[in-house]
Amino acid sequence: MHRIALAAAALPTALLFGATAWADPITPQSDTPCAPDLSGVMTWPQNDALPLVCADAPGGRQWQRVTTPQPPNDRWLSTGPAVTLHVYSPPLWRMGAYVVEEGGALRRQSLSYAEELRPLAA
Image (cartoon, rainbow, N blue to C red; front, side, top):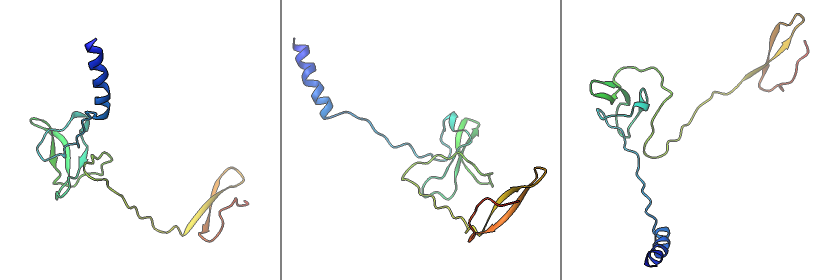
């Protein structure tokens, strides 16, 4: 009977003062271990002059400073505050459409930005 009363009192307390654990991810540092699934991933810690890459090292995979030109990388690890990317695209001055000519060949018809893009006659 006491166990039921204790459980009945503990449940509302646990719901009211939930013991939720939360931790920010650890920011990678040079020469520290990185997980196997991060192999080849790059990161750029805040206030660091050089990015890091998760690469094979004598003691296993480690975050290493990138000191040589690297090919573009599409796998990045981000920690800290959100990052906003601003992408620039030059104005589109000309557009085009394709016309199917007799015999099935395609011919590109160039249109200026002021013209309406619509089907063209062959």
